[in-house]
Image (tube, rainbow, N blue to C red; front, side, top):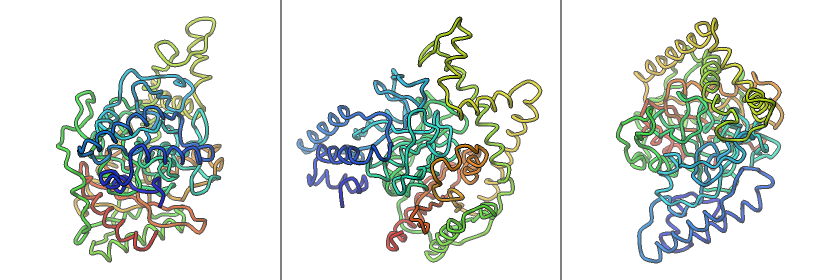
Length: 481
């Protein structure tokens, strides 16, 4: 097995035993990037100098006989909407094409304390608005399993980098499924933590009540290690939870005996691909064979989740993106006066999907429509949250498809926004409810495309979904899914 195919914890063991060096590992991954990047397009910016310096420092530490941390010396990638001091953070938008933040996002700062090797910043749908990474202002990222297909979005670059061996792990962000859906499409593991579990400070805001940073990894163990590194309260983020952060690796126990797992009937409906449904139901059978109890449950307001999300998220986006006016920072296109300059800047430097969501958001917030749309959406959001509260009175976790299909063709849905939005049908409810969810592989289509399923947990109960995911992964690996 090549180094670029190994997990972070496997590579950590090789580093500690001095069987490989961090410099050797970093060179191996950059060789892989040189080989695959022109085909995949996972990155916007590569940071070779930063990476090589980090790798050398890790090797020096090892040579002194010092212990290294779990992620120390491990090559990783960062989604390009997470601020990195001194490194361009573009949000895949022409309006921020040359923006270099003066500070680090808290999650990145916390991760940096483990001294991983940061390879670069990954591509995404512009300002994280999209589910295919076709909306990037720079280029389309391709799925490593089939380069005619999308990697998912908006964290498509982060997922594609891990799946193609161009990074060992990555950070993504999830507003309506943007970690879990690309993880499913690319056949890797992606975790959306509970809202507030990871600081949003320095994550360029899309929808502030929904956004959450999380890991994309090769396996569940790596997911727990990365979550350990980035989770925790942050005074710079008023929505950050003060709850204690457990050692998530202690939940990696292969035991689901007696675990109550709910299958929501609303997630197995007309429109879901037959191969996806079979793989997900087969995953439920694996859990049942391992001693878990399976129950059919109902989340009755699921049918309203998409319309609710696509009112709340664009409304928050319209407000958050008001700051990009060509005045304080970012790119500008001059005009006859200040108003003309702002019009030129925003109309020519924002992409079509971003402009679409700004217009939807402003419409929903406008006088005469606020009560009819935005306020009503907030009320339905409460009903969706209550559905989960009621369900978790009877089950410990919920098992569902991550997406209704496997990866679709590039260009297949980009001209039909409503069809594209429906791809989020199984992921957005978690964001609306603020719950944790993990997507992991559970099979393949006849076209050799990965299929993923998600485990949904109670608020601040990442430990249970990690335990269930770890148990399934161990069992499934024997079947070579």
